Image 1 (cartoon, helix red, strand yellow):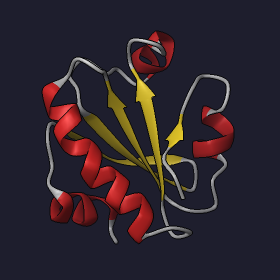
Image 2 (cartoon, rainbow, N blue to C red; image 1 turned 90 degrees about the horizontal axis):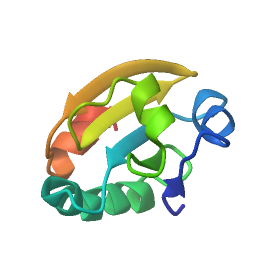
Image 3 (cartoon, rainbow, N blue to C red; image 1 turned 120 degrees about the vertical axis):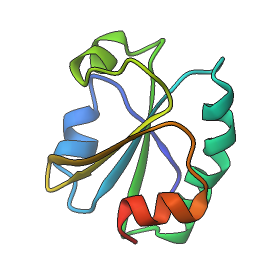
Image 4 (tube, helix red, strand yellow; image 1 turned 180 degrees about the vertical axis):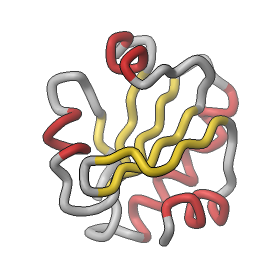
Amino acid sequence: MAEIKLTAANFENEVLNSNVPVVVDFWATWCGPCKMIAPHLEQLSQSYDGKLKIGKVNVDEEIQLASKFGISSIPTIMLFKDGKLVNTSVGYMNLSQLESFAGV
């Protein structure tokens, strides 16, 4: 499954109502570490298709959503299970760190 562009309009449906865990990446186009982690997130979405969703929130486009979750540094990666936030990490992670973070 491809990564999902998350917005205030679809966040509840795609993340909070998801029947599989969701890794949410808060990022921006100008963020170097965000660009470095992006290929790992894409690989995660392909490797665990159907078992895990990857959603991306552009903090410049979704200011209210970023504010709601208190995002002050990016990339911030959050893991949601059964509609609840269960894990948060700030900064770059490699693929194995992301897999461990997501519990896959």
